[in-house]
Length: 293
Ligand code: KIV
Image (cartoon, rainbow, N blue to C red):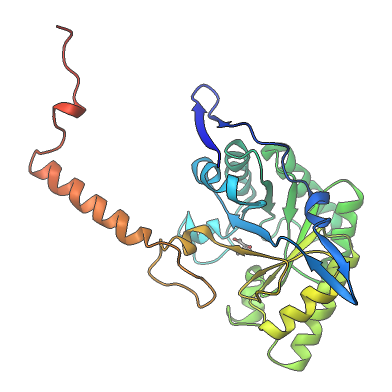
């Protein structure tokens, strides 16, 4: 496992030992290969969200991809949904994550309103994100309706991650964040969306909040890697919001496994610090400067 030191003049992480080349869109796409009458991906693709330089450093050695998700709206900015997230937010956090990583492919979410109007609008926004952050891919939500945009971007040198099933930027149309694909009609729409995003040239796609039988069928039948979140263990990889899996929030969605209980541990550390400040037992001689003798 790599360890990192920071060059304080540039804030650039210097891993030791220096890892090999970064993961690329073609290397992620090539992980999925034909097998029998379907496809398989070995080993599965590991993806987590990251919004800051330091979190990127910690996650990078373990991940194939880091996603600067627009979930930062809720997680970092306390917004009620991803709808108000701006290009400025995505560019600032995207650049920080690229500075903090060496190994993983960094993908940045295109925020709501920055790509839906036309392929040309999407190209202007995606190229700005890539120039300002140094990321290697963008992610955008939507199936059939976004397929021409995905094709437009990929033909112009922009690797795209699709996102179908539950698409949080469409919360006002969907009416909530519940699982998708329970009824036949909705399941068929998700199948068509996934196929069209793949045909349009996305190098992989996120499949969110989809019943597991449908997710498993899509993963087996679609050519590009399917990264599940609240989908199925049969997906070609998995992604979670890092703060969710670290237990930073009291409420955990059903599809999240908590690998730690950071909220409780941070609360306890802050409680002890406050107690020591109030009792003047912090700082001690160990944490104070003394005149030269
Ligand atoms: O915004 C985000 O973090 C995402 C993931 C949950 C897939 O889109």
